[in-house]
Length: 474
Image (cartoon, rainbow, N blue to C red; front, side):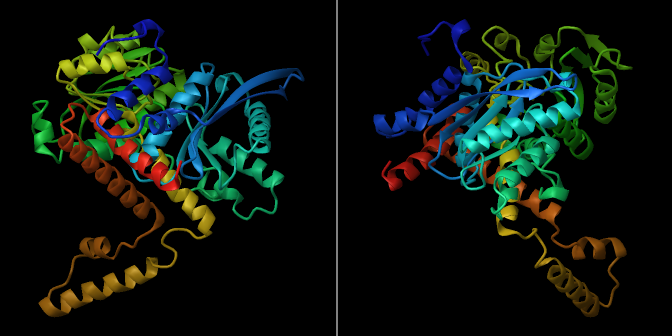
């Protein structure tokens, strides 16, 4: 496909829009509606002062973009990074719109960011900065349970979300749904079990589903199961760590290479994920990790030989420059936008299958949806039916023993009687969501004879969004 803008000048947002243009060509959507779907509704830029521990004041700059409010509330994380820009938050907000539509989460898309390196500040400073940022967004209508609901992203976590929720409560003391203004909170303050690892768990579920489809595996000459497959992970943050941990511990995959900010480490026999994570926490990087080869230029490791490559760091990591040298047969985009538009076409020509970001990393928003439902319904999952499930299961076991005259083993009895607690329900709902989305993408790919998964996934999303727009008369 011809490039109308020089490759080196293509922004993250332009990459996303080009991918949407490629998908919309398969659909009969009026031009005006196409433009409406692609356009970002609004973006706010805020600048505010916050006091540091040394008594000095500093001005901070933040953004919050609402891409589409065809469904309310709009949903999307808040990231803390020096690289945050207006273009980036709009690109990420648009991906959130398509992501929510794809996995049937009834939210519009939003995203926010603050230009800050959280490692440069104390916990006390970060709390003052976060609360002031939240106050700016709340007062301007960019945070509320029914309109705009943030979540954690790069550089933020449960702690920051708890501060934001509390700030909203202080400003709106009569809003009984105040906990629903933010997701990704600690369980003790209205969060939900399974949210912290949800995105990484979703990555695992996507790969598991891929291996349930022999015809898709045949497309890239894969055989067998996940067990023994060589995986390279870029970024051992929250998403990459949990994805690597689950794939290694539960699916017996080999994590042969881990790429971090300070370089990459390689061991063809497999790296101990938990030990690497602990090493990073203690030393700030992967350098000098024992029993592994170290490479100072981590991005070079994206080109190492492997079966599955999981970029779980930043956008635009695989470009037209290194795409010709990628050796993985399957790329699973755990990060947002790690493969550029120009790189995607090169990978298609090489026969490399790319499972797209707004599908792969949808586990976070899916479980955030569960948390939001919990907050506005004011009841935890499993509270009403948990013991009923136990009683019925116990009765089933007793009936089996009575009919067969044999005693059920303690282990089997425990497995049968295990009740539907919050964590098991969250995992079940997440697994079902990722499987269902995979099937929808596959059907669209076959129906429209599309040659890549990203375009097929966008077709699924665009059809749903266009239907909602038309029904609303937008």
